[in-house]
Image 1 (cartoon, rainbow, N blue to C red):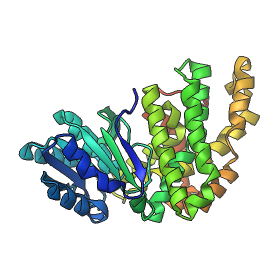
Image 2: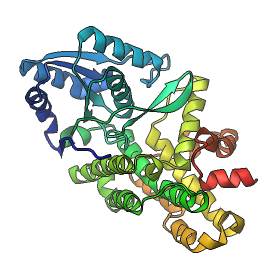
Image 3: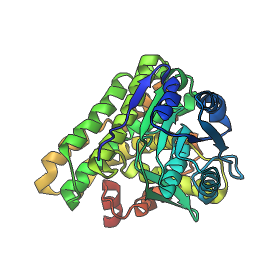
Length: 366
């Protein structure tokens, strides 16, 4: 599967949304935002679409009791009801990852397309076809649709909150361990693998690392590099048809912590912030296992696995990179105590029983 629609990643890209909708023949437009992204892009889009002679209705997704906008049943019902009531023909998501997940699933449920207008370079899921949803308190990724078009405006993205930019970098840095886990699963458990997709994802990752200083300074070039890498990671998953290239044990840890926060009623942490910290933790563990637990690395694959672990920087280097962009580097900065950390390292692989990671192999053998 490939993305075939228009992709506009440049300063002023938001100005092309209304002309695209009009030229595509849409008349009834649903805009999806929250209170923050409404001020950043939603109000501007609403005015531009209305000035183009199109009917526009904005839905502000309501936060939960902790003040977080999450992709749960309440958010989905809120948007689906509004889309049905307004006979909307297309959904325009103005926001970051969660709003996109809500929009893509609701558009899919009603059989209409959606358009992506990212407001922060915070995740690699803008062009995903899967929607990670919180259903009955558990996280499930549900098949949905990808965007028909993407309008990523650098003038908006460079002004995103520092924490969200750092989270986007953390999400990309997590590819170090996801690519290792993918290699490990393919060699030791026969999971499907694509060298082309592997290299595509790795190139995007290395571009981010190379431009870490510029990303940290929030320059146009740095933010364009980060956003392009996040989109490229998403395109790689589309090409492969599954999320292994970009989601390994570091994502399982992130999801475990997210569910723990939901159960305890705490404000949510940014996805990429958790992924970056988890990646550094796993790097320490994986390099340690390579030295101390040779039985986890089958002899017939030891040379390939040695090369794969060699491509994962040590945890200290990963924490150094995270610090350069202003992101958290250790669990304590996220509020993760030692008990939760120990439990999550043991139980997180159970969230994705179909994925064979080194963390899972270690836990099953222990």
